[in-house]
Length: 251
Image 1 (spheres, helix red, strand yellow):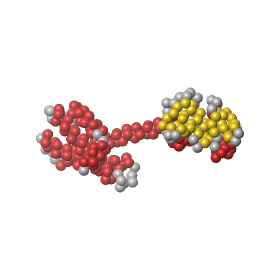
Image 2 (image 1 turned 45 degrees about the horizontal axis):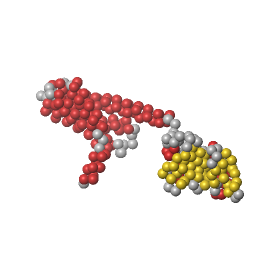
Image 3 (image 1 turned 30 degrees about the vertical axis):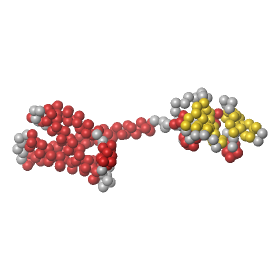
């Protein structure tokens, strides 16, 4: 029980309520729809806060029911939910008005009041939908226009051009044109990131990966095949990778 309560509190989104609180303060200040008849600013703000919270909760409940069941464009689903939300909201506002105001309405007057409420709510919904749609569209466009991140994570904050990496027990030796650095990292994870990057290179040994641009020549020391690199280092070539390196023009 306690764990469920903690989980609910963690998943609680306070942003809508913070926005409604700010809106209630603004509405309490400007006092539209003759709400200035409520002289006390705190009560007037509470009046608008109650309307906002009830409208939000009613819309959320209705939307959760209809959204999974209607195969419509979301604008029309939201519009229907918004229309249905005005029914309980209308009753709640009438109750509040009976508490705060001395009102005597005819049935026709009540109908016009509900119609005004429905039009106002629908106008607000359309405005919010257009704004959110534009924000989402802008975000998607920006994401499309941004070039994909190609630098491997393990090379972040490491200067120079990558020459090779090699495994040293549980560590990874990173050799660049600038310096050599030892980090705690799996070579398999590093190679996976390199394969997804724009750095061209190959595994030449089970514990060595070399950038193609770093290879100067293929040399032999007796029966051993070695790669001579542009920085003067020499790395072993495993017989397993020799054929692939030759066919792809590495050596």
